[in-house]
Length: 553
Ligand SMILES: Cc1cc2nc3c(=O)[nH]c(=O)nc-3n(C[C@H](O)[C@H](O)[C@H](O)COP(=O)(O)OP(=O)(O)OC[C@H]3O[C@@H](n4cnc5c(N)ncnc54)[C@H](O)[C@@H]3O)c2cc1C
Ligand SMILES: Cc1ncc(C[n+]2csc(CCOP(=O)(O)OP(=O)(O)O)c2C)c(N)n1
Image (cartoon, rainbow, N blue to C red; front, side, top):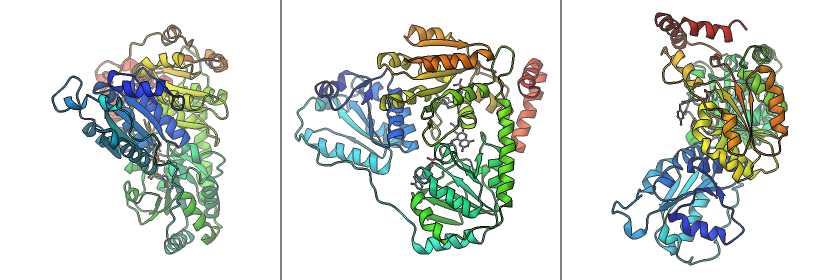
């Protein structure tokens, strides 16, 4: 149970102290606790727990719990409440967790009597596991101190094993549609976890390029001869064009949120285990409710092999060119700062084959998406659906606590790390050998990119950074700095070889353009406006800087 202690949690923490089946993981911020529990749940597929004391203590959980709920990972939160007799009086620290957490949970109830407890808690746990998301138990401190009425749980929380498959008629309709199609592209998301073999076989039969979403990356990209990369703003143009140019788009377990990246003309099929997901992002011509693996298994015997592989070859060649272009940006370079692509590439090369990597929202997400390779054993976590900053360190903590033997690497922004920095202290206190790589670009660089693309002049994005390595040292970590490109490889290698927690601060270019696969008119205008405004404002030096790091390399 990840959390921060407090008066109203004394009943819980004292019970944990007196037994050895539950472990209390002492964090420095409740938001970190919620993100850490979410990471554990993501990696294990099992329920993880976090707790916060009454009022501000549990309010701090909210952002992390939102992330868990949106990522569909099973997490139980214990939100302590003020004493029962004070509820409704505007008492010190009083809030109403039942209201506050309603939006980021499937189940959220106040327990006000010991006899209510076993059942309410079990329903909460069962709901989190079955619906995959957050449940919250609001528990007044005085109730937590009372004796339990029952000592044994009535339920065991086994993972639901039932398999959902579309009807035979639906499978036949899908097969007919695919068998008659010329250019099929598969768009595979996180729902394809566990369906890798079937996915590859369907792609083989259809000669279909496979594009993946960012959350699908860890399950789809590896050992995939049909891979043509990611689409979206961080994507590859090959992924973008494979989707835009197909006749039939087969979406499997994919809830990619950006509508402008879907084709207008193609026939679209969507397979999702949740009916309410169908048609959420784009029009759908055939929607099937089913588990990815079961549906593809049922489909396979009905598929006729496509002879024509021209579309696939074209997409794969495009992908190879695109990959080469991106790889060319990941060079060591010269001068005082490194290309962040290169830093990510070095991490990719040096990280263990079963490393768990986390990336902050911001440009670290871009570098992870493009330069960190998946292999079926590595894992990649981010705040991909909720999009919160400062997620990488908290998620790395949950990953390391739940997987003590695995290498855990957090790719952090300087803004992101500064936001979650309190829990650097937890690495030492909990003895977690997490490795933190800080992309120090002295800016909220992702926001600068967004500002440029939208035609705004950069404002409110500069960061006056501390010496992160020294701060890490002060917190009891190994702290290292790579100011120059030639220091990146040896410094990261040294940190990875270190037994305990380590932080590597890498000075990277601030204006490293992460170009979208295609520039829409809106964005092109945005970039143009930025140039004009910058010149008018006498900031020509910035444009030259921009050009230097990106155009003339
Ligand atoms: C800064 C930033 C930039 C980003 N840019 C991009 C980008 O350019 N490109 C990109 O792809 N993403 C990007 N993302 C991530 C993006 O916001 C989404 O998180 C991601 O695209 C969602 O991937 P997904 O649809 O696979 O996962 P989810 O949103 O989790 O959807 C998975 C779907 O699978 C279904 N499912 C689950 N289990 C099964 C099963 N067994 N069988 C069938 N269906 C199942 C679920 O019901 C759900 O509908 C970015 C995120 C950040 C933070
Ligand atoms: C909690 C939160 N606050 C603000 C944002 C908006 N936002 C998205 S990315 C980003 C910048 C991240 O900066 P940093 O961690 O330094 O990474 P960089 O993009 O500079 O590499 C901001 C402010 C957000 N997503 N989440």
